[in-house]
Amino acid sequence: MNAADPALLIDSTARAARAAATSLARAPGPAKDAALRAAAAAIRDQSAEILSANAADLAAATGLSDSFTDRLTLNPARVEAMAKGLEEIAALPDPVGRVLAEWTRPNGLAIRRVAQPLGVIGMIFESRPNVTADAGGLCLKAGSAVILRGGSESANSARAIAACLRDGLREAGLPEDAIQLAPTQDRAFVGAMLGAAGLIDLIIPRGGKGLVTRVMREARVPVLAHAEGLCHSFVHRAADPEMARRVVANAKMRRTGICGATETLLVDAPVAESLLPLLVADLAALGCGFKADAGARAICPELPAATEEDFATEWLDAMLSIAVVDGVEGALAHIRRFGSEHTEAIITEDAAAAEQFLEGLDSAVGLWNASTQFCDGGEFGFGAEIGIATGRMHARGPVGLEQLCTYRYRVTGNGQIRP
Image (cartoon, rainbow, N blue to C red; front, top):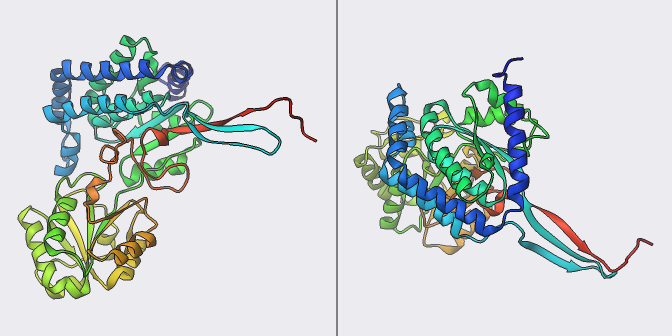
């Protein structure tokens, strides 16, 4: 094997991360917060370098969709948002050492469940360079080391951002290896990460269906899955029409390339004839295209016909699938058939219908009278989020500081022995 062998690279990278994680787990909260604030300052100070690196990534990228290009692109506002996000994480309570529960047994044993860091996290993501700052900052605050493997299309941007994070660690006297970028863009390094049981404690994939499928298939390390965001907005028969128009337009078109964007619009049959043409006109004016079922095309015959594959597609673009359904149960049946258990919304003034919808979902996040684009850690008050978990173990929905901790038990006795 040579020095570039992925197995050797992951071994050296993960062992350095493990040593850093041991130190970081014992770091006091103020030191972690100082590192985050220093990293935010470095991002602001080095914003020109970050934007130049991003320009190089964009120049090298070819044949990308508009939505993919949007995810890859940084601008001064987005750079400032990264810095502000780190400061917001610093302002949150330290999640490490929290007493999650405590009780005393009849024999006098006092038991406490206490939050602690996960250890070493492997983060595999695509296209979005801001994930470097979000993931690095959250893992730092949660006391875990992180190995970041971004997509090759954002390599220059990620490198510039990671340098700022490491500057922050160094300034605060914390180990720089708590945040590391993968030392190579070789795809085999991803495979080495997935097989690094005993070196990496958790893998978090954030990207398209192909990436997540590969990670779930090959991983020998526990995975916190971030599945595709096939989100639905359901306009119920008791919806306020103006609210529905405003919320649906935002849910679909605010940013079409994020996982919280609505990909399918469901319209309740009793209001479809009056409301669907208005919704379509609003969205078309914003540049949206459509795929529609027979019920929707009976009302708006100009809409292209949808296939079953269309309803199972996460567009991540200015395209929307539309179906007319019969009530809450019709909407739930459609979501169960085609959804990814990510985020769904109902728009209605009927509280009983909203409760029926929200209780009937299997999805990680359900909203009532709000845009699906709120499914985001920053909007939930987590400071930022490392992804949206759609599995059923450990964490669901936006993964923030609390979800990046595990726990242990501390038991205090006064000489008790087992009978």
